[in-house]
Image (tube, rainbow, N blue to C red; front, side, top):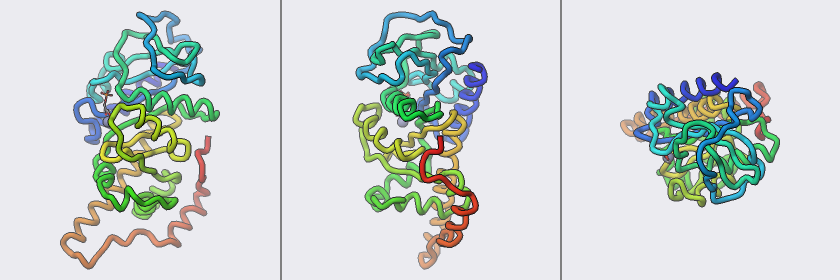
Length: 270
Ligand code: 13P
Ligand code: ZN
């Protein structure tokens, strides 16, 4: 099982680079691995590394984690040189390296706090992804979108209305996490609050954080939402030339039809 998971991580890392969402070391990810997988050695390297927090639900669990300052384009070629596998201690407050040590991503708090929540809530999701998708980040600079607290929020409604597939494949929409310093526990805590209800959240003026059944699923959800953001921004280039013509968006009736025909969930399905 494990080689397949690692191959999928490498594949997604390649897509992130090709999309232009992974400049330099931009973005990171974690994937929970089956602890009883015979491919995962029981041997560990070096001393226990403190997490700085206690996450009881991930105790004894193993994760693939991207290394800090490592590049997605290098991870696509060699995932084990640009990330590693860690095992969380039985108290959930430290980890040890299971494969050759590579210092984990600076966003480890966000990833592991989300993983802790997913296990606690009985979810089958195993993957967390942070990346810098261009069009979604561009929209996160607009105060009217950031400040809209209706549910679904204005950003979600705009994205859903671009093409039917956005609503069909990202039915939970997207919520916004107000700006916090990258890598901070404050950012991780704010993300955790939103990830209970959304599969994808937008980190203001920074990137997105997504959860998925596997890393491809997390990538797909970001891809679907970012595609809609791109269509919206492309449509606005027409408005720039013809200010009287605003992008129309799908009608409320067309959106209701998608909701009915696809029988879309209002909560994370598993
Ligand atoms: P890392 O290189 O530490 O993973 O950081 C990249 C990033 O995108 C921080 O938000
Ligand atoms: Zn980032």
